Length: 103
Image (cartoon, rainbow, N blue to C red; front, top):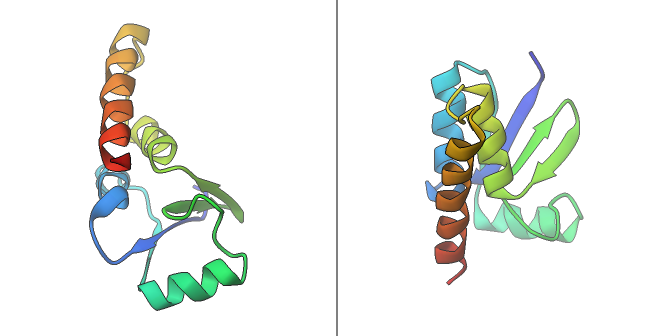
């Protein structure tokens, strides 16, 4: 299995469901919870993408966008449907949640 690190604040927020999916799948990952001071330092040093947290690092490659990471974790955990129509419904729910988060 790949070396994975999930980076987010020490709150539930956008990383909560990612953590749940990875734990559900039994996938080992480093749960790197940082505080807001560390976030500011790492952001200033260019260690955090423009879009912010969460990030998922897999074998040294950093990925961002919480719902893209959640879909990936859901696929690893067999929580994401294989049926295209069922996957569409999941995507609708996730995109709606994203719009709510944005407001």
